Length: 216
Image (cartoon, rainbow, N blue to C red; front, side):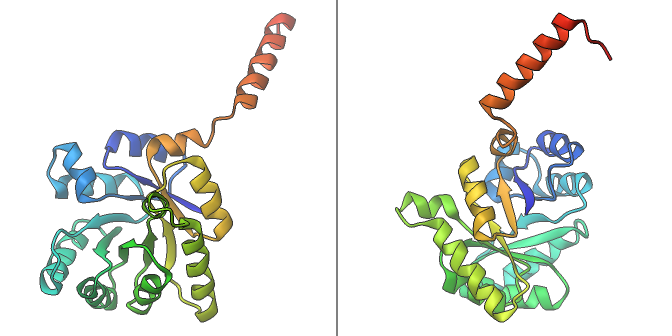
């Protein structure tokens, strides 16, 4: 499974990239707004920090303007993936941009049927929102499992990008369900390395080494 980090915080991205833990980045207008910076500048800086895809989202909702904005975003860097909403105009724009060689991440997916349409439209990624489904007492993992079966049935190359991940269990279950990518907030990604038994074991090893006077 690939890990994308879901943030516009360039310091966090740089730190995680240096640790070799991320394969790309996802952003959205809300995350960019929190940075208080110009969107193009932020996207350009992020694209310099990773060789993987960086999802940059349009803010338009009609076909013509989405295509226009998508082309502008793609010109920022070669590794930009244009993020489009899962609407009929968004799917139409996805086909237009994909046919022109632009990677598209179709976002705000909440059903297997929507994911099927995105794959038909040529999306590079489909982003089912697990956490938001769970908030409505709908099993987000079941949606990922259904998408996986459909894509495998027909050989679609669209990658399943598990989004709206809230905790470590979401990451594990997404991997078990066959998601190709998980986009994860920095704190959740760092938390995957934590376990109380690891901490306890390390403390015991260090105590024994100190007692024995072991130095390297």
